[in-house]
Image 1 (spheres, rainbow, N blue to C red):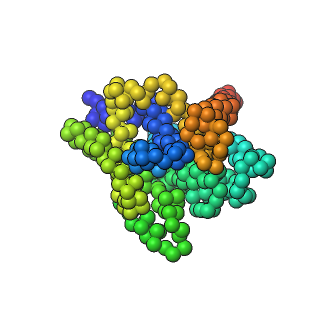
Image 2 (image 1 turned 180 degrees about the vertical axis):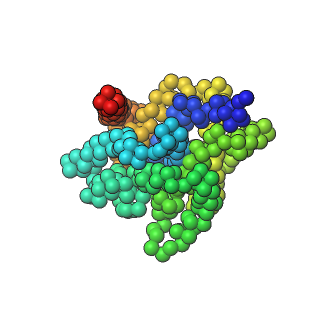
Image 3 (image 1 turned 120 degrees about the vertical axis):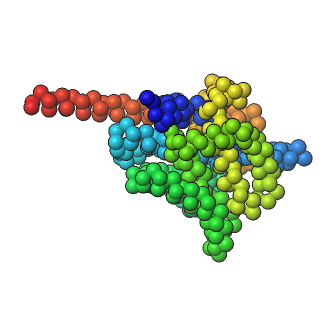
Length: 379
């Protein structure tokens, strides 16, 4: 007889080797970032002002990235423990280093060269050192535009440092309770931080401890995969078509964010938007054949998702009023230059280092297997 848990694990798309729709959601997230920064470079006509007020901007794109990161990283950690019985911290950090550091360091090197040659201005040593050390979410909060966007990468990297150890130390039930408590307390933490006299206005938007709830919500998605309680919750939601509430929630939340800014985001907006992203993730994983699901899994959209990290890095150089060249701003020239830079970063930096990591891991596995065979022959 097949147990209920086995059936859930066999049918849960979150437990599949290749999870559908995630690259497409990542593509939409980076498009939000591109729009959020690029819209500020346009002539602020009534139409543009209205679009900026009612369309999702960079803050929402980053929120989606955080939920995705929490979900994917926790999924990988739990799969490793399920497969091998343990989680290798050194292996996890090595994989993250190969994935994140090369493209980031090349970008920072380019920014340094541009600053030293006078092409861009306002870049000091701290604007390069801070992103390289993943401290940009706390220092400097008044830094140069050109590396300012790395605050969100710093938030994710700090999460990558802390969370694997927490997964190792905490049983699943304890981890779920801690995550739920963290999400519920996050508005209080944000408001409390904003009231501190030494915290600059708006800094709550960028700090790890004030933005970690979106990552936690993603982690909860991963912990729920294959669990009966989680399946019952999803069945209750989807049986009543409550997932469609997201279609109402998101535009209302975007409008309220534009109107009330921190008052809305710190209290309800960040948590509500992250939960909405989580529901969309589950919805599209369950329905990849729906019209929206097919769009998210359409090859061009998936490709944008694949190069989203490089798009995120390089959009800061082009989608800004600081760049007054023909390839600056939300123009054909600006978008084309951004796309070329991202493609170059993906094909000549990201992919080679990922392949290098895979080759080294395979070689290490082969050496271990050969060593075990040698030990067996000698016994």
